Image 1: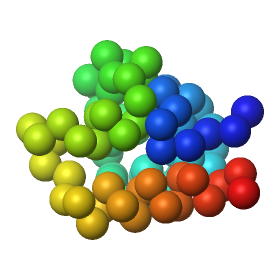
Image 2: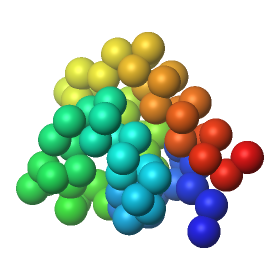
Image 3: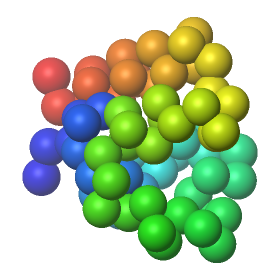
Image 4: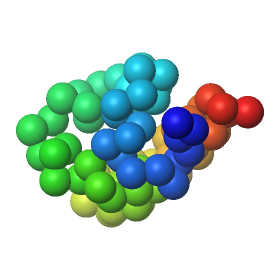
Length: 71
């Protein structure tokens, strides 16, 4: 299954390639107990929540790397 930055966060985490990217760029995100609530939410939306504190640069890097996986 192809994953993109717009895929549900759970799908990205379930793909070993996506999980590796998130683990590298956002340590602890995939193991955070609260991530279960966010699994159906698109990764783009999770990363855009202001309370998560992800910089626009980090969001752009995650988007670029995730979207390159199936090109």
